[in-house]
Image (cartoon, rainbow, N blue to C red):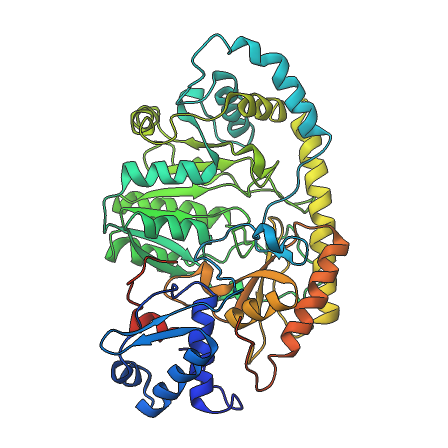
Length: 505
């Protein structure tokens, strides 16, 4: 279980109980999951059976374990405790007044632009009210606006290549349903976006992680404004590793976030884009490029590389996902797919048994926001506000938690923070909730429980809220720097927790 046996942690049985408790609270072992037998678990972890027995007894006393003779033991949850899901979800409503939500990387709406867009949409809505209201490919005015935006970014695009979806998540699910058979492999970055990893698990795929280049763990000391356009903070994808994975594992799909990667904020270089698309073309792997963060450049002098699909002139290797959720507002729930016209037509047929189409009023509002007259103003507003918030979070971390390391991203919405020795990201996340902060631990963004020494910290709140969040995180972290025992706080009943999953904390 990773570093659960750290020196100074106290008796081994307490450390083991703490590790298992964290797996439950962090959502990696579900409530009501059967645990391996004591003998099996002791052999897997290399500890005595006495240690496992004592750990189980402690967890039963705390309410995290239930047992019945002849039926084994299974995880439980004490009353009043909250479990983080495997993906990322908004803060539960009953905690909203007392807990700062750093679990979601999404900005508030760009006002007054959003309200003006909705007002404009209402004036255009009568053009559609005498129809059935279902447009599986999206209304033409929005498909045209999205295509024009791709063209303006250096990727010539026709409206026939665009399908409007219910957010990027809806588009991703539709693509997985159409392109992926159960048990087929999908190559992903490690780390990657937690909710996309969850969608891949639900699709029954076999996820093959490819680590981001070790350079991605370099830090800039957290200096505000240290991001620049000279290449110092661009790149970090292991092109050779991707080429080997595509050749040896033969994945059906590759899922990439090339622009202000979530969670790390990294930006893929032009050379890396060219090489990765060429490698995928050689092996017949289809790449899905998630561009939900692509418009959130926070450095005025940064020259963005061309979109990943610009290196696929034939249009058969790269499919692009986009969304309004990170650029404008998540409440719009409008996204899009850019693909070949033939694939777009085939996706239309598949969509009839899913969500059919996206809301017309919201599509009209997004078309207004994407118009050449409005979009530059909205982007300037959002980028300025988010940059101020990023710099505030960086400054607060440098002051209150100077031993936490990270690279200041050139764009996007989050910092990928490496915690100091002795501080587990999962334990920190569950402890921080007691101090009034909701954060995403590193293992949520990885495959099979890795990335334990990381947390993702979005900067989507105003500066004063971020400052308070860091003060609370510092208080939580202070309880974890020495011997500690975090205070104890549903897959389907009968689910079996894998020994390998427990062993990877």
